[in-house]
Image (cartoon, rainbow, N blue to C red; front, side, top):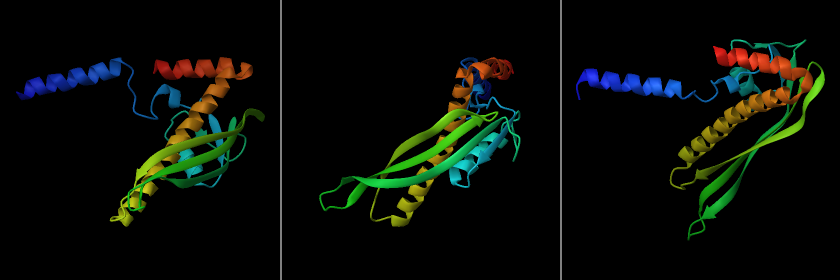
Amino acid sequence: MPLRLKTLFLLGLSLSLMACGFHLRGQGPSAQLLFKTVQVSGTGATAQELRKALVLQPSVQLVDKQAEATINITQEGSDKQILSVNSQGQVVQYRVFYRVHFDALANGDVLLPDTTISLMRTLQWDENVLLSNENEEGKLVTEMQRDAAQQIIRRVNAAARKTPAMSKAASAAYTAETAK
C-alpha cells in the first residue's frame, strides 16, 4: 500500500473518530467536574487517584479550604475470593473486589450522602508464576482505583445536575465544556 494511501486512510479514520464524539477514557466532557474549586479529603489510593484526575482538568482547582465541592473518601479496601479451582484443588481464578465509601458536599450542603462504589475483576492465577500473579493483582487494584476515581467524578456531576439550585450553573458549565 503506497504511503499516500496509508496517510489518507489514517486521516479518514481519525476524522471519523472525532466526528462520532469519541474521547479517551476520563477525557470527555462528562469527565470534567462542574465545580471550580474542590477539596478531596482522604489519604488512600483512591483519594490520590481522584486528586490526579482533578489536577488534569484545567477548569478545576484543588484547595484545602473554602471549596465549592468537598469529596470525602471515608473508607476503601480490596479483597479477593476464590472463584475456581482445578482438579488438584489449586486455585486457578480469583475474584478481586474493591470498595470505596465516599460522600460529597456542595457549598456546605449534602450533595451525595454516604455512597459506595463496588468494583470487581477476575484474576487468572497460575501457581508456577507467583510473582507475576501478585504483580497482576496489584495492577488490577490500581486500575480499579482509577476507575473508582472517574466514577466519583461522574456521580458528583450527576448529583449536581439533579440539585435544583445547582442545575442552572451545572448545565451552563456543561454546555461551555462541550462547546470547546
